[in-house]
Length: 88
Image 1: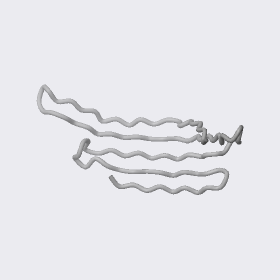
Image 2: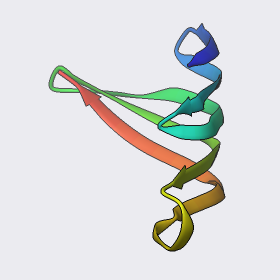
Image 3: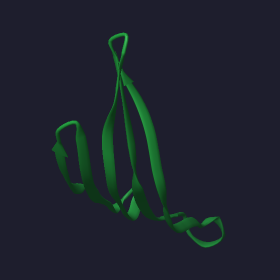
Image 4: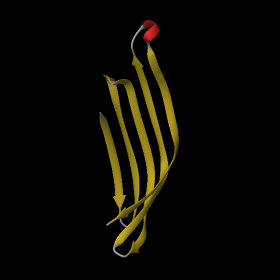
């Protein structure tokens, strides 16, 4: 697997992340890309709450078996990412 990530952080953070893998080990090819914006919501009783909003794409090309027992899929999934975390 090869990849890179860029993250810039203060109270808010911007993430650009991507990787590529597969190459015949598990799947023929897979890759993902993520762009996100993270932010701190605040602190309540010593617990820090944070959120993230972004977009992610994931591609997988997978094949197993031959002939009638062949199973495979070639799929691209993409959509929004929403998250909430609590650090204590």
